[in-house]
Each structure stands twice: as C-alpha cells, then as structure tokens.
Image (cartoon, rainbow, N blue to C red; front, side, top):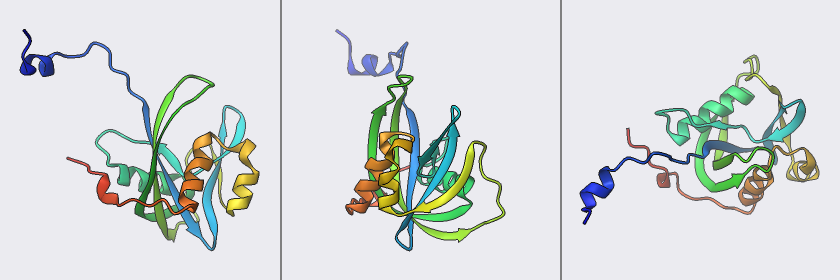
Length: 161
C-alpha cells in the first residue's frame, strides 16, 4: 500500500503546462488602452498583455508588459478575472489573468516591444465593433467583465518568493 508520502514524492513524467499570461484593463477618459500588434502577418487588437516570466509575480508581469507594449506605467487596482482558453489555430492552452489598472505616467518616447504597431485608446463601442480584429475571444470577454464591474481584491493573487 502506497503511503501519502510516497504518492507525493513520485515525480510525474509528463506535466501539461498552459501558457500563463497577464492582461491589463486601463481606462482613461472613457477609453480602454489597447495595442495593435502584428501576429503572423495579421494586425490584431489586444489589451497590453504577455507571458509570465520565471520568478515574476502576476502583478509585476502586468506592470512590465503594459510598459513594454504601450509606454504606460500603471498601478494594478483589482483582479478582473482568470480565463482559460484553447486556441483553435494551434491547440495551445492559455490561462490569462486580467487586472484592472490605473494609468500613472506615459513615456511617449519609449520604444515598444517587437510586433507592437501602436498603443491606442478605444471606447468600448469601438472595441466591440472591431471584434473581427481581436487577437482572441479573451479580449472582449475581459473587457466586458471589466465594464460590467467585475473587481476582486488583489490579495487573491499571492506570490511566495
């Protein structure tokens, strides 16, 4: 009979790992901060978003990605939602953590990440009308949840160093 100690210690030979990403929802004067980016030769719209890096907290990743992709420093204020999605194009699985954030300071001369064409501010109706250009269904789902008032405390996101 295997003990709990044995079961815990047994290493797994294959572990499935989704891509963990963060996205920020930033509003200024009624418009959402978005990025237009080139993905596989196609221009798409997305929130400032990107992959979590090793040893990085989700909050730090959101702040870093927003600065790198838009030139905006932001301060996260709330968790909007956590979304799981499988891309029909390539079968990749994503776990996206969407955070509300306040704009703090814009660095207009900052070079944006490769692939980012520009940062822009879109009203919710402009974003919804451009749905065929969204990078994924996660774009509107997170925006819609944010606009509906979904806000959860950042204390739900714990990073143990």
